[in-house]
Length: 69
Image (cartoon, rainbow, N blue to C red; front, top):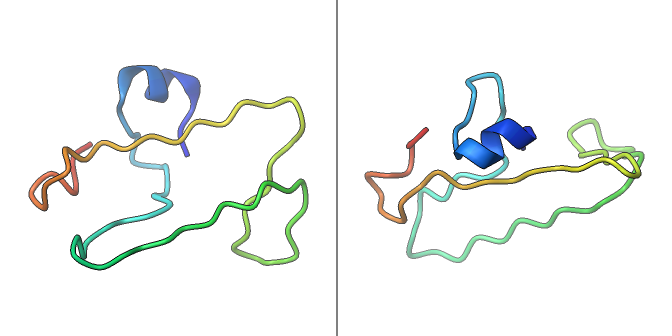
């Protein structure tokens, strides 16, 4: 996830962690985001009420564009 400035400019700062990397384009990949304020899972995402969250993709859809930033 990124902040509003990064979403507006479609850039990713190095400190951000990717949620998903689709390195196998011919295989279905599903990623479920559960919106919850508390996660019992150490790797689970937590979302606070009344806060905006931004998710972007910088790939151009090709394997070569997978690591665009």
